[in-house]
Image 1: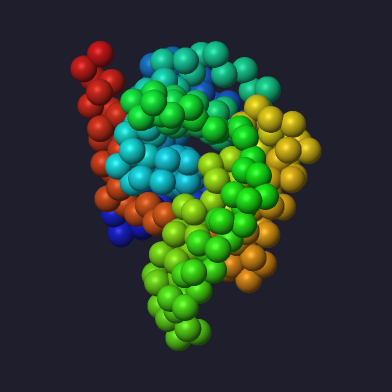
Image 2 (image 1 turned 90 degrees about the vertical axis):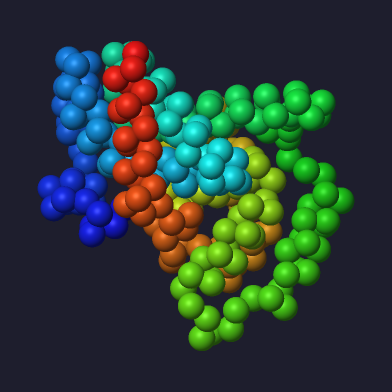
Length: 240
């Protein structure tokens, strides 16, 4: 979130590392009916959760809608949060569940079975690599702007199979542990490791390193986007 669109206190809260105790306090306040605490929760996690939704759905508008619905689910079920995992991990599961549900609905509409947990075969992998390589001559040179590089990397990430893309974002962009990623996706830790490795191979080491350097700049989610989602969720809550 950009500081010029947020007041000082909100900007500071959004950038300050949180402890598990701090998360527990926010949860207690939300359960008690403190909607200001829920707004704080959204602003703290908006950027990271949006990146996760955007990486999964590959569509800005769909990602925003999925994030809003996930937040509403979080608000309604926050009393079920027991602290067995980090709050961000719990929220990530809700976001992914919403994203996968949307993908399944779209697949049914298209009469295509979703392949959310299947890795492509070698022929499919070769085809993806050919697609990535075909874009090489469009890559910006060393003097290209940061925005152009970010756009290139987002396109490369969008080209990855869903299972690899989501694992890569959680591990390399959000810097979640193998264990946390496995919890979010409900897959074995060994699968997390193998998918993360193959995703990095697909992106190639030079691109993977660049993505990790950019980190929070990926799928830019500035103040206007953040404010829009917060305002929309709060408005929907008031209508309940």
